[in-house]
Length: 133
Image 1 (spheres, helix red, strand yellow):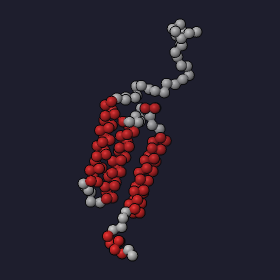
Image 2 (cartoon, rainbow, N blue to C red):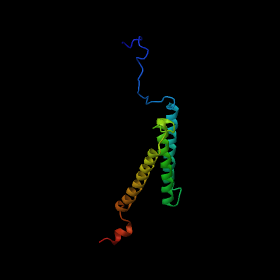
Image 3 (cartoon, rainbow, N blue to C red):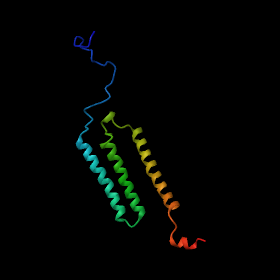
């Protein structure tokens, strides 16, 4: 039979699931703008913290920046990747745990690399240069 209108079930997909649920996907320009504005703010605040040396301790600054980084990752996941509790049937515990593990690995690895770059590649101080033969 042809699908031109004589068969009422010609367009039906029996046994197939619809993968896109348009009711839960609220992708709007406003959502992208909100995500962009939050991302800019969450980038500008740590930049200001470092440039104006707001905290006396570099350790405190580092942990505050890591906090902003975690919030920014969450903003990107919600506003740009559209990972909400209703999308794709909700987050499963395994995907949430996997995300947390990746964030911890990324942030701790970045700190480790930056620490070793600072200690191994900084030019010697004047006192150290005077002691050199």
